[in-house]
Amino acid sequence: MPSPKKPANTAKPAATPAAPPVAKPRPSGARAATPAPAPSPAARAASASARAARPADGRKAATPAPAAPAGRKKAATPAARGKTARTTQPTAAPNPAAAAPLPPSGPMALAAPTPPAGRTRRVAHVAIVPPGRAEAGPLAVAAAPSRAGRRGPHAVEVALPHAPEQAVALYQIHFQPEQRRNLDPGFIPLDNAHHPDPLREFAVFERLAREEGTRLAPLWGALSWRFGAKTGLDSRALRAAIAAQPGHDLYYCNPYPENEALYINSWQQGVTAHPAFLELCAAVFEAAGLPVAELHGVRPAQAMSACNYFVGGPAFWQRYLPWVRQVVDGTRARVAPSVLDILDSSLSDPRQRHAGSSYWPFIIERLLPLFLDGEGKGLKTHKIALPACEAKLNAHLRHLREMKDVAHRTHSRWLYACWLNYRNLYLLQTAGSDWCRQYLPQINVTELDFL
Image (cartoon, rainbow, N blue to C red; front, side, top):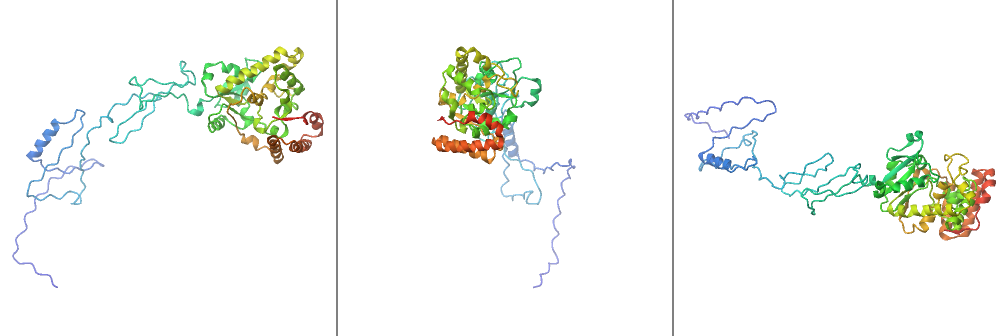
């Protein structure tokens, strides 16, 4: 259908109002402000009232928008005209709890997270005692005074010297300058050059136990400078192994798992390393009142340890140190002087692998299973696995260790005899006939007890 024609005489359109003056350009990135309409008298009065009621903190209160005059259409918003406008959101009233000043933060303060809007902030005041503070001790855990002078459920004061795994005090013993290069930086270096003692590590244990800082530690130990080379663990791995098994009184390990497969106990292994070892140990046991049957009893792999690699808590050290000291002092008081001279001599180290050590360290390090059966009974212990050492075991050694453990667990003398024959055949093939002729007659135990 054709469109209708416009009438000829139409009224001229109304004149277009003049455009408002163009605002001067602003710097780049600034948003142009939309000119606001002139406020009405009622709006000016409301603005004056709002300024009079403005809060003391300087925040602007929300100003109500002026009402449109009756009978007039609402003007199109800038958004409706395709333009962008900046709108002012009403400001919420200040939250007294959120605006409360926080306690001053020092270089070691812990910041509390900002609470969501409308919730009350509850700050737990945490004070950290530096490890070197003398009055608190190197490993003390203390409570700091609260800011208000009182304690409540939401004002907890805790002082942590280190992370939990760092609270374990681990020393590393060295006695020669060249050994310092092999020290683990995660251990506390302990120079023992000026403390010669035939008891070696045990004397260090006693000296550390008298230190107040060590006594306050939940766990502590003193390891040799060759700990990493022997065990394959560094300080971080050792701390992680302890943290993975919390709540024990003693953590120990055995860097020589092959001995668990080839010998019925650690005393028998000592025969191959230290001359006249069993005879001297028997003299010590008789003088100290220890059961001599221990020297010929079968121990499972779990009970065997070496090198005095102990990390213990107060319950362990408070029993173990006096017990060993009683063994040493009892032996010195009752054993024959000629035997005592040998025990204190360096004859135990004919190959000079232990810096001319006396017999005492090799005897003391093997006393742990006997201690745990008696004075230390009831202590919670954990044997730390050493993957690097275990990886060196061949299939024969693994089978031999398992056979011996099963024989011990079942008290099977028949299975023990099978293990003995298998062990001797293995040693003949690996150690040689000369070695076997020298040592097998001493370590072929047939009269035995399962301990």
